[in-house]
Image (tube, rainbow, N blue to C red):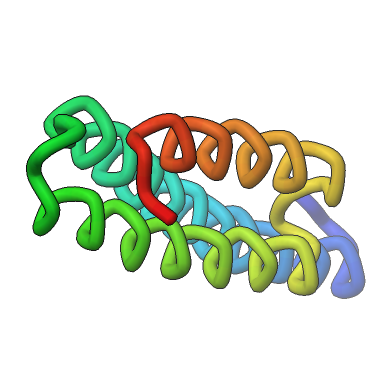
Length: 95
């Protein structure tokens, strides 16, 4: 454990950051999973699920961009996730 005052403060800061980052990453995993489930459930003739996938994708993109701006995720990591999700939603046949 840290002995110096500055090291104790640094440890507390990193602990706070770690829990916040874990929460954000968990939320991102949940949203990405929901988008993927909506895409898998969407069939070419079923309109509600396609619209649902699009709105879920928009929410996922917002969360991913926010995580990048806060420093939780690397920008390329978020860009890759966004790209793959967008491609999957587009493959369902929505316009």
